[in-house]
Image (cartoon, rainbow, N blue to C red; front, side, top):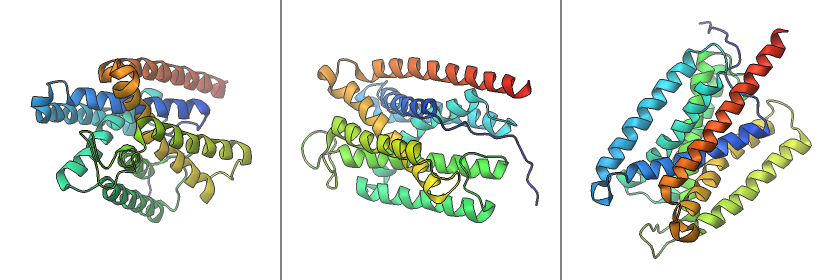
Length: 273
């Protein structure tokens, strides 16, 4: 069965790509927490239903538009990413709460799930390129993998940050790094990977090039979310809160998407000359 060949459906991997991805994870964490708490602690379940309702609905709409498009459209791609950041947060948290598993266990489960998507992607298409998504089937596996990385990054970030005793959210397997330390330590690892990619320039679509991309992609989730939680809950006694972190995140995300859209439009004009 032949699959329709499309123009490339994913953005170029640049510094602006990584900045936008980090912003989306910060926004996703703050927006998810703010939305879940909007009806108060006594109505937490209602808030969670509300959050999954609007985030999943909007994500499916933008993903549909993204899948229907014949080429990369920043507004569809990045809104899908931003909304998945909200829904991915909720999904990982829900997995833990429904199963009663610990963060170390949910992290392992989601890691295996992600590996399963990679294997299915390669077996089906014989291609794991992160630069050239040119068919519907490749794009479907790409987004399944992206979703898994969001959930994995959420679980891993909580595992690193959560303490084993004390506080309202504890976990027997938690490493107790705290929000700020988790963001700083994993952020350093993230920057080291980007430095490696920039300096050594691994061959496009080689194992190391694909592996370092996805490792960095996973790390954007706990890095962005940890800083969002630190500034939302801990900084200056939580003066910003989730509500202001959501507003800040929306502002930065809007600027990023507009910038990416203008750059993409400029690239298309140059290509057509």
